[in-house]
Image (cartoon, rainbow, N blue to C red):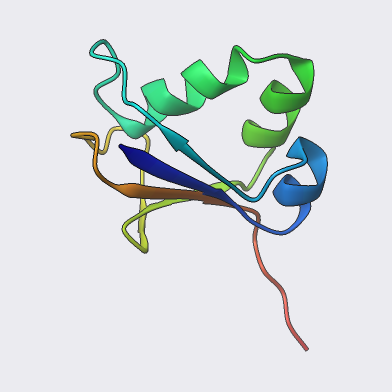
Length: 83
C-alpha cells in the first residue's frame, strides 16, 4: 500500500494531506502514478503538474522514471523558500 503525502499549497489545493492507495498493476513508476492521480480531474492536474513540483519516494527526491513496487511513501511538494 502506497502512502501519498501532499505538502504546502498542494494540501490546500487538493483538500487533503495524506492518503493510502493500492498501487494498480499497470502503474510502474512515479510518473505513471502522477498521471493516474491527475485523472481525478482538472484540480489534480493543475496541482500535480505545476512547474517546480518535486516528488520524493521514501524521503528522497526522485524523477518520474523512478520505479514503484507498492509499499513506498510518495510525497508531492512545491519548492520551499525560507528566510
